Length: 134
Image 1 (cartoon, rainbow, N blue to C red):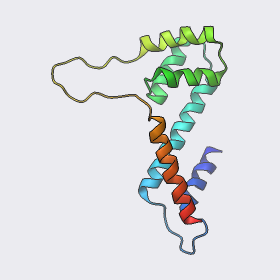
Image 2: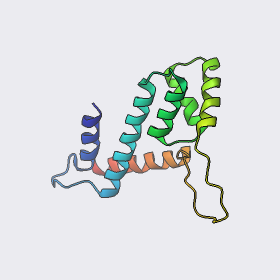
Image 3: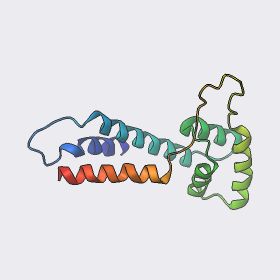
């Protein structure tokens, strides 16, 4: 199902066009990244939440997102009760990789998800692209 959706989305820029051409690389990159993230979210949501440590580690490995709000949304999607969620969130906070502490001042990795404004901007750009092609 995801493969069919991915193929459709990648072909979307040329639908209705007389000229068959490949989608722009930037468009392909955004679509593949979004579909990969959707697939990882589905894998996490469908995975058993017992034992909790395995579930949390799997979430961190697959989504690489250290935002507790995003983790909370995943738990909501799983349909866990609030009492179960609070213990899972505490475990999640404990299992997050700690940023390296050093005086080198080098860049650190951020696991934050895109802000709603960034996501909205991406969606608007995609909608404009679709409307231009139709």
